[in-house]
Length: 173
Image (tube, rainbow, N blue to C red):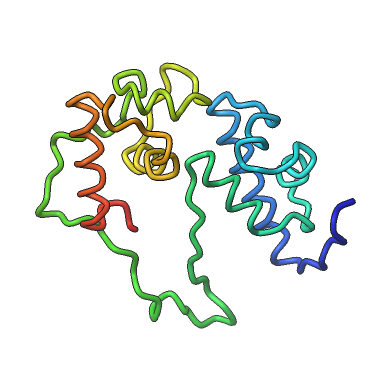
């Protein structure tokens, strides 16, 4: 039996709907069934269904798990409240170091070119290209499943370059 839905304000409901739509859209883009996505995220298919339907009884942890398995980030940002702009006092996220060029990392990463990435991204259709941040997220989330001995020279170089870029703040982390 699901938890009793908390009261959500009129302002919060559109945000919840937008989050649920983005999660559903990403899952469909990846060609992953809701049953598989729910299993990988560690929740029941019923919870996944409720999540995609923006039911407020779904926990924040469930939304975070769903976003993680789909290679999404959830970010909070300041918005204008009562006519005063709080964003002007909010620190800006790290910007990529413009002096550092990562020419070895392709903008879009083809999963098929990297055997270990293909193995950990089993739920993503062939031909789908990942952003650098998405590829790094998959490697980090599935680090325990990587067989370092089976990394090709190219894949090892890609992983090192992605980690180096992340350490320099290239992905806003």
